[in-house]
Length: 248
Figure 1 (cartoon, rainbow, N blue to C red):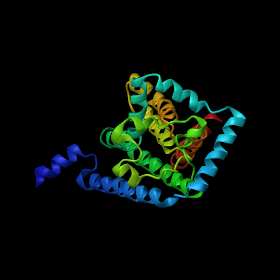
Figure 2: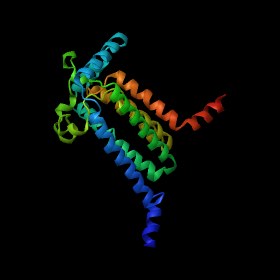
Figure 3: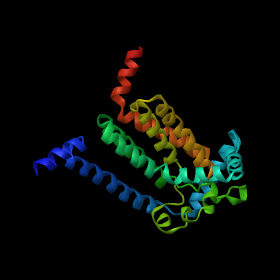
Figure 4: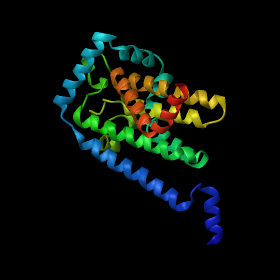
């Protein structure tokens, strides 16, 4: 028993109990979040109305650049595959692995990282409840296509994906928000320059992928970026205050 406890202290920064507690928090949140997101609002009329409003605003300001991105990706099977896998794995797979790595290798940064992700996702869920928005892939009359439909088990209508997802949860883009949070925090805690560069580029790649697959408008991405900045500012407010004070 003593040997097992000692091994736990070597392997787990805060012991078995804390690691189990973190898993409970994370998987409990994922379960509650997916259920809440799935039932938050499935009113197609309202969602499409909001989607058309997003299209109208984009056309007024910069046009539907997402169509250009889709054209690029559909010209290359490799690029189409990469953006599709990025869309499905950038959220829970990459974020989950990033949280695990930070917990084991940079434990001092873990709590704030976890709290920032949780806060951003809770705020995003509020947005889905009050502003359900249909994604670009549902506006086929505008020329959008569902890139993921080409990849069998990855498509939106398959099994557990259909059960756990809300088809009208486009605004804000939590893919965009979580990628930015992970990119900023991981870039600040990794040591090798090459990995810092990878994590700093990661958010931009995810933003490209979610638009190229027809799952988010660029306005959704902008809203996700704003959401990430708000969550970071709230969780890291003390650090931001000291940084600002040092500049004054």
